[in-house]
Length: 397
Ligand SMILES: NC(=O)c1ccc[n+]([C@@H]2O[C@H](COP(=O)([O-])OP(=O)(O)OC[C@H]3O[C@@H](n4cnc5c(N)ncnc54)[C@H](O)[C@@H]3O)[C@@H](O)[C@H]2O)c1
Image (cartoon, rainbow, N blue to C red):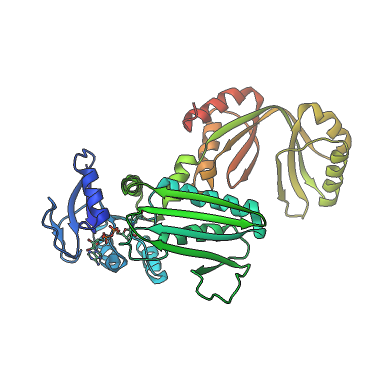
């Protein structure tokens, strides 16, 4: 049973957490903290973490930024892990969260729904795809009791979009200066408050003659509870460090596909001048041959140690172009690729892939990586076994 200390126990989210866990066999709220009396809750509720004598495995916080110091002091003092779902922290408070996470594991996300985190990733892709020709505006809508504006999620979305830009867009909150035109380097962030809306976020890319709108709407508060429980399970596996929803998504989506290519050959040049190598590449291009995995290092004497792969059927053409320059041709190889959008947020994927391949006793002739992909050139004879071992390990059937 995971023991939870619920901070903000008497609030809307605190009560939603409590109701969701009434029949839980996995989670138990052992105590709560709330500045206001909450006698109706069936567990002890302290006014603050100071003087709190009960112990828990994890603090789940849905309160307000004013409770942060008390939470972090208690967590560091007692070694209790923390999930912070509260929004509206100042940059100074975010720094304090960072310091505390060096001593105890902390998970912080301004939005616990998986869908919103998908929206952030899609917004990044849209920004990369559409580029500077499109103006970006974010509009968020929340119930009339929400204290902070704009929402922490709107800021997270704006930061996600800026993270893939060379030059960051300046945040502009609302547009009160009516005589001023929109500047190119702006990202507009607008807050609407009213009624009982749980949370709606629209990211708009406005170009000449078209509008692309990415949208997410939370229909009930339970979606945040489900995400918070995932965060609890995740943070309990860590000792220290600062984590967010991408840490969870990354581990789900680190590898989502494993693919293979047969009949691959590799040419390896242990020492070649860059100019000579470029001349070889030009010859290969003129012969209309496609090269694939290019892997390169610089030797101490300034020459390149370089290899590339190509289809078996193109090997003879490539060898003719290379001529008698010292090289090794490796035939009977194959290419195996593991890919996943979450790889860039997950450490250790290369270690897992290489350990599995070595465990099967295959040679690994070349490795190339990108943020979301690892490709290995291995023995053709081991390809079927290796592909199925990786698929099994990553749950891909
Ligand atoms: N991360 C997410 O997915 C997510 C989802 C929903 C809400 N939130 C955030 O969670 C927080 C709480 O939302 P809510 O709608 O439940 O608000 P709420 O106002 O209904 O509840 C907050 C509770 O915290 C208590 N509290 C506030 N400051 C305190 C302090 N210093 N010490 C002790 N108790 C304190 C209040 O008395 C109140 O009972 C907000 O910051 C909100 O933006 C985050």
